[in-house]
Length: 325
Image (cartoon, rainbow, N blue to C red; front, side):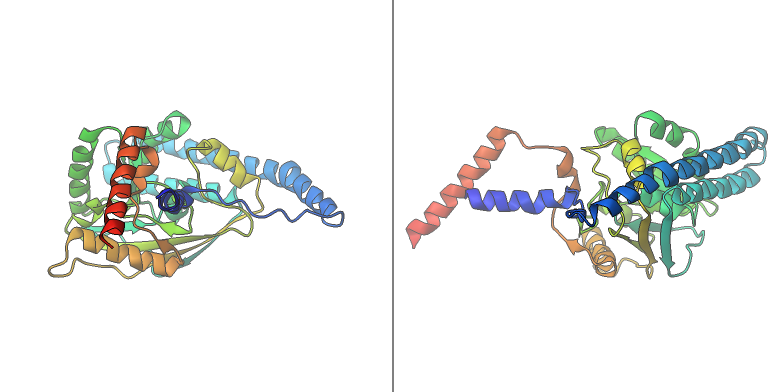
């Protein structure tokens, strides 16, 4: 019984574990090269990247603030310019990591009654996709400077925020989703149906909300190459600021993005089956392993009494089967 419980626990927790690369500076010949790389990354490349990101913010805010304040009477023009500015700022972010991103498939178009869904490794997934197309994303509300950007700049592209600890937020978000996909001029809607960051080796269960909207679902597969840095954001162990610093002090962020064939609900297919079919398409394209876990379990731990009760029930069922034999 203990072995079974440990096996299940390991199968779940390994989806959310950071897997640092094995050290290669293990002998006297390689250690000097590692030290040279450390000096180059932290004392040369990192300051240049800080300068690039600072320049990006100066350019962005110099245009965004006047456009947002002075064009309130012309919403169509304002939204169009703000979309371009958000895409530009995301490009500066990617440049600050020396991002090498390969996009495969046709660029998303603005059409009503469609939603894009993607596997989720880090909040930078949004930035990488946003630099090509100004998506309106569904995202957990964050504190600090990230929350400030969410409530000011990102709301200009129609992003929708929620708090997973508030049950009433689910109904509000569901209503906003339906309203958004009906709008002809709204930005394409992007959803990460796993609901949490997974370490880019697995995909956990997709929430069915994106598949109950009665619209076309466009799968997007994202796969990061760990040759230079592990792009997985382990939010339980590090802040997003620390995660960004890790990316900015690495050699590069390398990844592939595939825009896959749009999918529609088949006759007789449930929303859960539809979600699993799309998850299989994304997992196959990105080379990820599908596991049957709910990602929200990452944020909740069962009480010891509940765990012991389940263990006792399982042990009793095993003993009964052994006695019958």
